[in-house]
Image 1: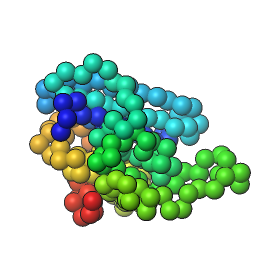
Image 2: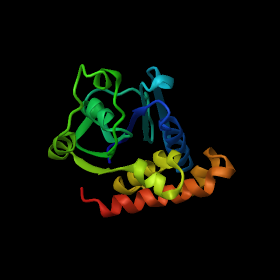
Image 3: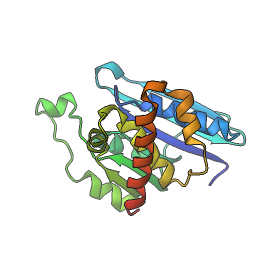
Length: 196
């Protein structure tokens, strides 16, 4: 790991990207790291793009990054994976929700949704892809898709020595805690079964 490690989370408004960044930041702070986080909410409430950058290390001066600087990209939707890959290092890891939310230009027929995106990602980066939305429905709550992706990222990026349970307890209301803990473990399992 470099002196400062960067995790980029990208999704669409309503997918829980900000919650994941808060849980991640909490786990990193509890581990004793200096952490900087930035958020971009582009029309988030209308299904627009939402991204969060979490940077951590012994000393972090800025949450901002340029192209080719992220160690990990967690994409909550296929198009968001494509949109944000320029920010990922060549040896970076992508955890992607193999799930489509069709933007207006695609839904109206003005543009086409890229169909071979996964092959393109796998040819350039270490990629873990699965349908987290489907897995969340199987667990009984579609809203835990985001925490499934967090669990997969923790496994893929070898962050298993962090106290994720404590971080979840601090950031998630008690009535939703049990299902979110289960979702995190499911994400870890999915990443273990995926080949990089």
